[in-house]
Image 1 (cartoon, one colour):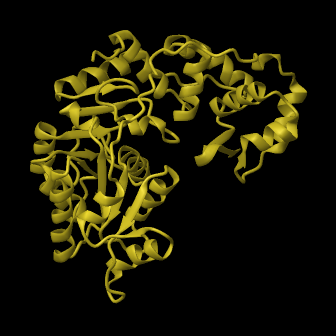
Image 2: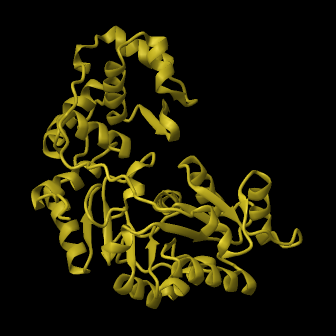
Length: 368
């Protein structure tokens, strides 16, 4: 089936809007819904941010910058895709904070397959790596793509074992940046035989704050997340927590209480994750057909919204007075402010573009 696709100009505008100052995933979606096209949303950014209280000019991503991003990706054999296009995993479209675009390299068909994520310790034990390979090979043979983060240890073992059946590596940096350096050959093989995925533009070097963002994509692409080995402060536990918030199945492999690499997994099991000792445990839990709900997100008709500009200064002050550094639900703001829901949404949009509020998972907002 032919799927709609953005024109070059539309794709460039989507990239510009997504990379403009203070435009996060939730704000991006609201802007597209309100204005119907990225080009119109970009034109509205300066006035919206001014209304939100930004005294200087908002930094809008430039045409030349976006064109350069598209060209660099193409030279590397990669491309940008948006929700609804082939290559953008359908389950990812529905998570909180879904990326407005992905840069991918490889076989886009792997984005359409039901997937299981396997993650774990970078300093994994020999037994942990062996078991990760066994799980990846058996689950891959059952028809699932194996998703992981191309980190040392468990991630690398899972990718290696799933190369034949299909694997996707989610990166914290640009698709052209090799990290860790020792995985260069594996990185290249996945780009040729599997799928490399990132929400970063080419040339982006992985930084600490980018790994949790990568983790939400790993869990968002998968129907289930398996943690093989993890210390109590492991990033794999972040992936597991995000998976639970996204409604995914979470499995953990138990380990010796004497091994620090098992503490995180044992805690996950105590907290309600499913205990896993063989591939059949996850395959039985995921039995049955799976048809992702592909909701198109290409230039939708803008909904009928109240004009936030109609809200007066008193309304803005009232809404701001209800905000604090502690996150609060938007529904609570609507109830306490007695403002129409669309007006509250519009005012929050302006405030976020002005850098005055921050958005959090599960629809919470706070003062920045």
